[in-house]
Length: 79
Image 1 (cartoon, rainbow, N blue to C red):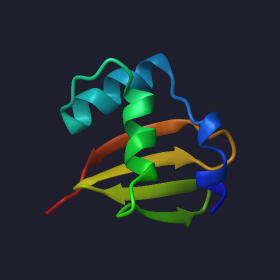
Image 2: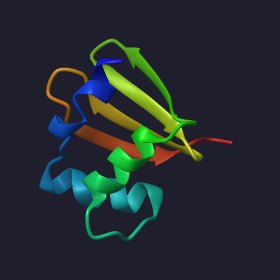
Image 3: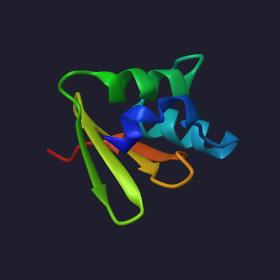
Image 4: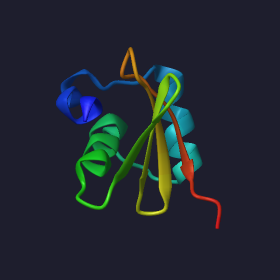
C-alpha cells in the first residue's frame, strides 16, 4: 500500500491541525504522529478513492491527499 510506504511524508497544515483536533476531539501535542499511529494500526482500513486515501480506524476517518500526503481532515465515523 502506497500510503504505508510513505508515512514519512505525511504532514498537515497549521489549519489542518486545529480542524483535525476539533473534529475528532483529541488534544495531543503532535496530531500528525497521532494520525500516523492510527494509520499504522493493524485494524486500519485504507481505501483510495480518487485523489485521496480514506483511513477508517477506531471510529474515525482520516482523509489524506494521495499525491502530497497531506492530512486534509479527520472526523468521527457516522454511526
